[in-house]
Length: 110
Length: 415
Figure: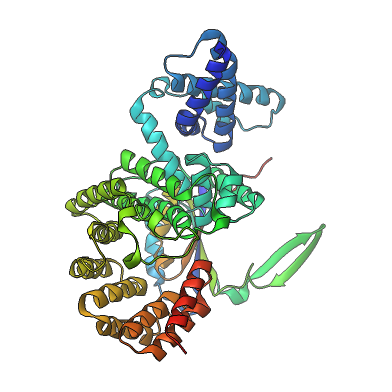
């Protein structure tokens, strides 16, 4: 099963964790076969939310909701179950500065 | 009584004693709460049909598990024929199970523990953990849980449905946690049990009276956890609940007025519960791996063993609060320590300690700080200050008996 671990950080903490530490973490996950993909994201100012209502697309500036923390990056991981995924998420360095949202990846129904 | 009636009664009593165990095992075998619940009900329905004809089986529990599993697989197969889009590997796996493991008492106990830990999984909202535990582990109906928590049954049902969906969709495993996660996960279980207990112990107003007494349910849960996993803190929590429960009858007058610990009729405390609670506290303390529940239980045990309020070993209680503060330096514990300190060293010492808490800005909206401050001032003869503090407490309380108690005190301190 795949889980998406979303990294949330307050604006002033976006660079609190050195890039090279996150790089090393991703490399480590990749080596142990845990990692599917991981990327850091640009700050919230660049976010756009797309919605479709009744077949019409609407685009709004900003993230899905207003909170103090913003989406700062993600790790797409492979884990046996939620307990395993939580264990992996807890190892992501910004877990200590912000929060990591763990979301099971939904299989699209054909 | 006719034979079918007798069998009917047997099925009823097997339901009472075994249905939670059967459910816990079926969830493991079938991998889904809803499927397992339906399978369990099918199994009991089958028992009502077959036991009058074929006799009651030697091991009703494994008969029920086996029947439930068979019904579920049969149902899924039939469903599959009509529902070809169903994803194959998910549900076909149901049939491949270790059959010898069912009746083994040890694995059945493991299943009950799996159920407890899954219902109290920290990935579920705390409200949902409580509701799911009462529903699945204790077998209460959503109506019963709703009445106990003054929450509409549909809201609770929704909470339970969402929790089950999350267990399924986020794949929360049906497991007893690994040893390195166990302390934290056990803490979550104990927190649920303690909340259920307190809900039954402190909300003793008319509206909260239900058929199922929540405190009794919490004690039952506590016993179950201790039986399956006798960790010191689980033992400590059970002791704490038993020791509090021992005073239930003495805490209120027949008309529902509050009686303070020092004014309670100690002859109406339940001696059996005190003896059991005290024995459990000692066992937990001897483990040297105890935590806050055990220390609180130890404090309750010192009170329980004192023949009068004046003869209480207040020095021991202050020492236990000091130990508790080292584990958890919360202002509420500090407040309780101040009360014990006032009993040991006099009201002036208690007042100084409380004013320090208030001076820091902690507990400013906590009624009991002002109630305690008022009590110390009253004993020191500072009536005007006492009255002002009682009034502050009164403005903050929302409990009817407490309100009446404070009003009586205000009247006593005079204008």
